Image 1 (cartoon, rainbow, N blue to C red):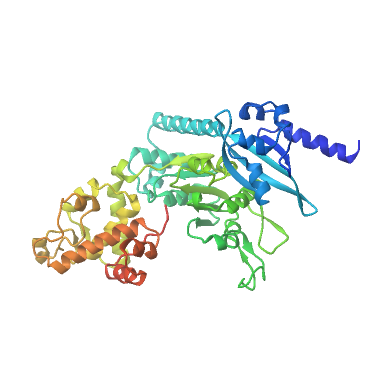
Image 2 (cartoon, rainbow, N blue to C red):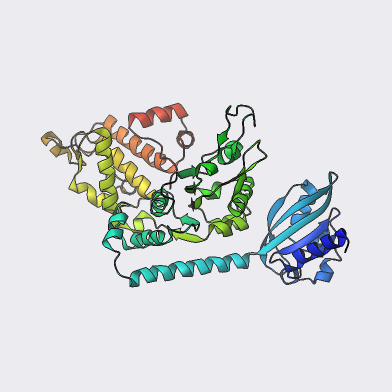
Length: 476
């Protein structure tokens, strides 16, 4: 059999046996072939589809829009969400095929989002069953309890999360950590690494939102000497290489640029990467843990996140609930932060009992991060050795209530900064400190805070320094 016949038969087998819905289109938009399963999704027989063009299919609403047409218009790969003539929603991607520098074919494939929703339901069911299994199994052993204590978790739900992570830690299964910003995803990722068989290797923590897109590839994949202007003389190993034999933690994975999503997917599938400016592939072996506070399924539907990468990441999904839903953890977290502050600043301050109702009753929209920032602000504001002591106790060695009230309490008029014995300047400073602390916990940079307040960035830096505050890093 001639080589061209073999190639034709090979292509036919690929198109007709794949799970995805495949279209092969020429440069003029004529449909040359489609996979058999496409008929059910697009509402036309294979024969009818092959007798028309993608221009006609888009005009009739069969493809809305046509991803192949986007490639024909731009000459670049494309990914879109389609609404088909049968009312289904599918994610479609297409790639150009060039010969002699000329576009000759467009290959597209699509996947029904029904598959994604079914997969999500299956994962949710598995996690519920696992949690029920843990509950039936009784209390953890003493050794487990001691290790979990290092995470400062006392609530039943967080014990279950920690035990789930401990069960999967010896494997190399990818873990997807979900939850609001500040719930402690980074801390649990580090603990997962300590429990894993890779604990002697590196734990590489990458905030995908903090690396400029222009530098992302060189930072993640590394580069060879002379790869670009300003490259280090000896080259540099990227973050993926640094995680070899260890754990790679990608926080804010939903912020990963689409181009980098494709490259990351290739590394996950093949286990090899190529530095910028290099022709040699390098083997990498790491355990992948990712985290996000976004709805990745919605990001997929909006075309901002690759469906195939989502499948790869969503192996063991673990949801960390917000602090307001596990208030039993607040005392341990507060005590740990107080110990850190006392060690950092070389003093031994304690919390006044009147502070605890506020700590236990706060909404903590910023979760653990907001709680820790509030305590640091209160620690620095307290003049004596007792944080939150009433003003009339300050002359007895305590400290006035110079730590600002919680955001929720102030917003509802539960307290006033102009307490007895405090001057107007002191009251205004307390309000300013509270506003800055709230923004520092929620916004990613001093530039963002400056934009919100309508002042210059240097002014924000000076004010934060005056009040002993700093912008929280975007760890989760």
